[in-house]
Length: 188
Image (cartoon, rainbow, N blue to C red; front, top):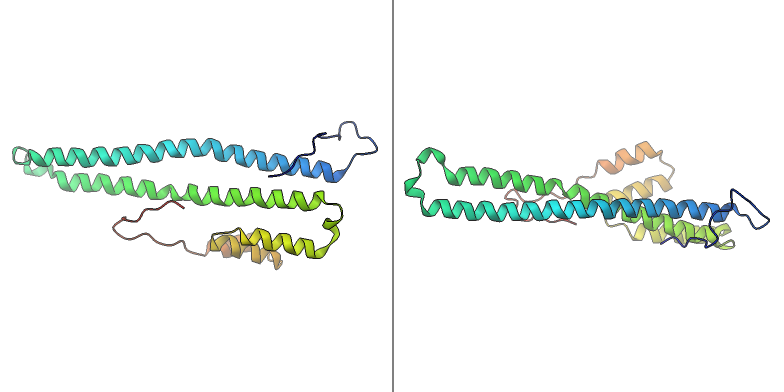
């Protein structure tokens, strides 16, 4: 986490101790705080939705079992099994669509780590001028990435590839497919 200078910003009333480095660190701290705050807010909503989908799936299965117990009294055109299967498939597709949030959260957490590590290096007035320290920072940041897309984006940008092209390149990496039976829905 970005270590915020305790004196805060002096940009409004600069004195002899004023430093653009301190102001940069404060701004990086704001970025990390905003990203983390947004992630915490959205995480609570996502958890509510995920729990709701799980409960719905359980209720659907219980409803199907109850209907099948009295199945001989139901008209054949109702086709309980097929309708429940359709509902379950839609429910599963919805849960799978939430995987985007897991990838987003993971990426945003890595952004926070990157910004924090950058702030740490910039705060060290000696290390910030040593190329090998920047190389260590780059290696540290890349080692924290878990998705191949992140690594490709990082490597491309370090090689000087324009951001739009690097994003396109990283976007061409396909995510692992789930099985056709949706048995292995897994959030990252």
